[in-house]
Image (cartoon, rainbow, N blue to C red; front, top):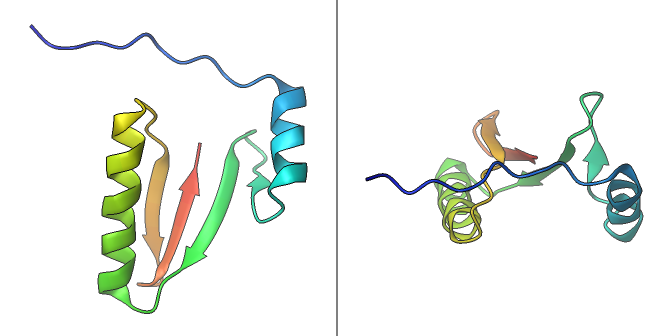
Amino acid sequence: MADFVDTPTAMPEADILLAIKEHPLWTLTPEGKLCRTFRAKNFKSAMDFVSAVGAVANKYHHHPDIRIVESKKVEVSS
């Protein structure tokens, strides 16, 4: 049988605003998601970073949207 985790609930707006204040490199998208762009040296480094983020996210049952843009920018949003 598959393992299922309860669907996470959204952070309260006050917590999101506090998180942005404490972590100014993160922004809030129009859809209400926290977002940050990381820059890697090259495509391989970007892929390694994505893999590392994926491992940590999976450990905590948190699965953000991750995409590589322009071969060495990594956008993470949740």
